[in-house]
Image 1 (cartoon, rainbow, N blue to C red):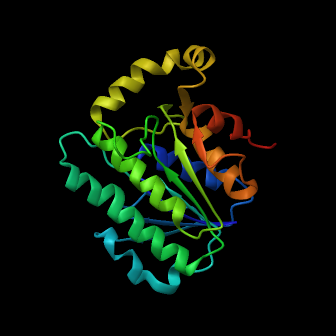
Image 2: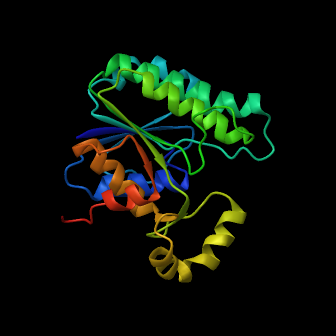
Image 3: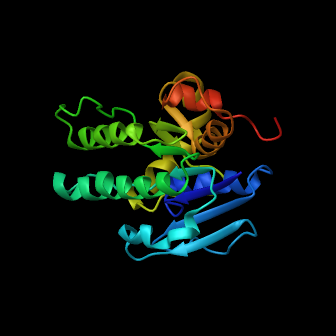
Length: 225
């Protein structure tokens, strides 16, 4: 399986990339982003674009992929709705529209979040915009689309957040993660599980196209299984 990954330098994207690299069934990963991910693995081909709205100019370089793992996103804190919508909705749909034209047999997996509002009428700005994005992606003629809605995500395998506040929170929460995971499976997941679940739905599909924490955890098949 050949996959395209957006957002590989973010915490979730780092976890997804790691799981792709250790999965023997993933042949190639095309990483597209603004910043380099670091030393490249033999499976990885990296394309750096200062402006991701230029993704359609990559043309044939986007052809021949089986899945896209779209982990790109920003926090809505301090942003106007128009600015947040440009990054969250406009950019995502531009990229998704380009990919579906070039790879109609592709599975597109979009990282959304717990609390996303698909009515698009709620009070929470980020939830409305994420909901509109989910709705629009679902209308595109991909072979399949899946919306991942993780809640609390524990970084694993040395992965860190780019946000200082979040890094501090994860340091405190790390020792508590095994207990919280047992007590609150509906709300807790990890970067490993998100990555494995994405690969699983791209490979085998899933019973539902909107995956909350519980479904993500159920689909995160351990390595070697």
